[in-house]
Amino acid sequence: MIKTLPHDIVISACQELATLVTQHTDGKGNGVHQTDISQLEFMRESFAATAICGVAEPILAIIVQGKKEALLGEETYLYGAAQYLVVSVDLPLSGFVLEATPDRPYLGFKLSLDPIQLCDIITQIQPGTGKRENSVRGLFVSDADIALIDCAIRLTRLLDTPQDIPFLAPMIIHEIYYRLLIGKQGEAVRQIATPDSNMQRIAEAIKFLKADFTRSLRVEDLADLANMSSASFHRHFKKVTSMSPLQYQKQLRLLEARRLMLTENTDATNAAYRVGYESPSQFSREYSRMFGAPPIKDIERLRIA
Image (cartoon, rainbow, N blue to C red; front, side, top):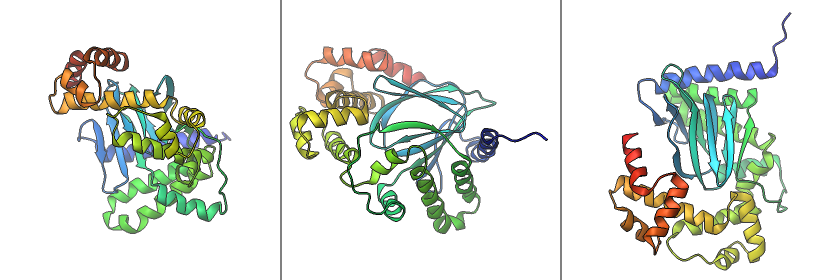
């Protein structure tokens, strides 16, 4: 008798999930597809794509089919079918679909993470956990287990019975949170919603940064907001985001400039000034370094794509 290995069971379940996601994205084109469950989106790409850059908010993303690469600062994360990525604070990310064809597209299951709901579950399963943990990276990749994939399958199946969504979807989403909290990366997930954790302190500083990234950055102000010394804040910020506060601000500025040029037809010089640059030539150099081409060429490439 041939013994079925745990990994084979997970892969088989992932194929079942791929069939369901295909049913809800087939014929709708590539890109992100919102569902009737507000926290749930599907991703579909038929071709290995150009880099998609943006600021990712806290999410769980399961690769259902295909392979993807995520870039955070100078770090690269590769993940494929039956693996998942969790982002626990707002992070500037670049993503590349590495494996996709029209016959076998890249498929993804993406669930936004709600810190308040997570905090509820943490209180129930880990009461009294109030100590401040060591900082951990705000992004990680892990292998999915059968319990997590099963939750994703059941949540996706609810789309066929919309009348059940209001009652059953919150229960399944809570179960997904529970599975993440008791999994290998439970500490990192827990810090998303643990008041006064180092990650929460850094998350507050990030919110402040995002609210007005055009102003001159004073690390001391961010450190005060996080109730840390400047040296401690800088160390924890880099641990969580893989970059310094200045690098983080720079990426926010360049991403916003790219959006302005792409969606509002703003010229490069104007975009540079609007996001806080005083020198258009410095803007052009840093833009080329981040996106691999000068502003005009990059925007033309994106429009063609």
